[in-house]
Length: 107
Image (tube, rainbow, N blue to C red; front, side):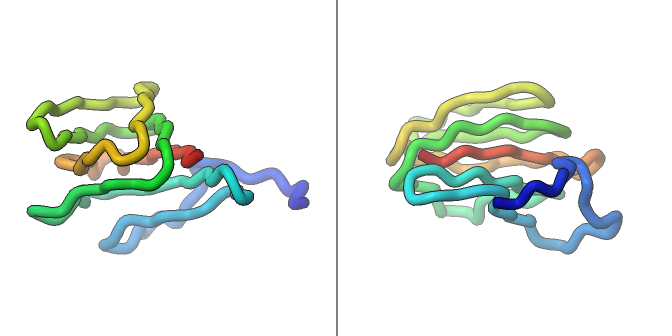
């Protein structure tokens, strides 16, 4: 077990051009990830169709998701939601300044 203190907002000043996905903790049933987005979106025609439920919260910045039924939801700092397994969704927008920091829990 790692007993070192980490900080969710600590990341390199020069972020790469692609999204950063970091697993903060996981076991056989749960995975907690930090995702840092800087304008990235889901490629046209692609959908996330995940095997697990996903609970997410926006810790910084903002983002927008869309669902297969054409509904959309805007999320900003502090907003959270549950995406049930196999609910097809896409990321339509992520902020660049500040970067969008998502905390996700897959279970």
